[in-house]
Image (cartoon, rainbow, N blue to C red; front, side, top):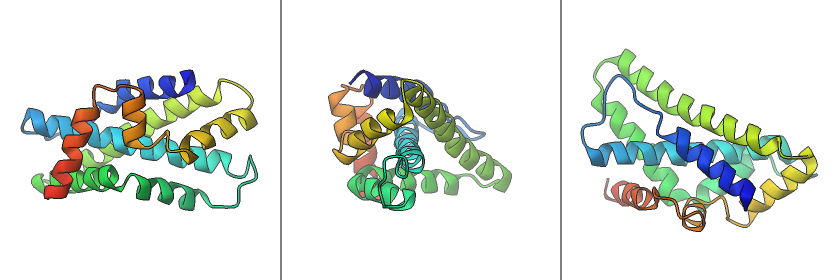
Length: 169
């Protein structure tokens, strides 16, 4: 639980870091942007756990298969985050500014995810950490809704709003 909370706090601290050339137009848009970045960061973390741990603990699936399962389990949020990013990019007429926004989005998720996984893997022997991290993913504890509810994240309502936005668009 403490490790999961550490990942969460680091993710939340850094997930709001996407602010590109074009600002979001409203509080709702900024909330969706932060939520989408949070989802993308979780996606990155799960991918990194898969990449670094599957062979370490003798699992046969590929990192892509592992991450794809998480995407399916979190489709409501993952699809909404990707839709939101696509929508934001369409609003930016300047191709360079659009590319900057997209890079900032993914760079923010990657930086935050890298920091969170580095912190996680610094906590002990890699094999033990991998078993623990894989269990979190396998049991759904790293799923957006479970993670947010169990950790009592203040972003939970924003994540739900993003999912509802994605459903409507």
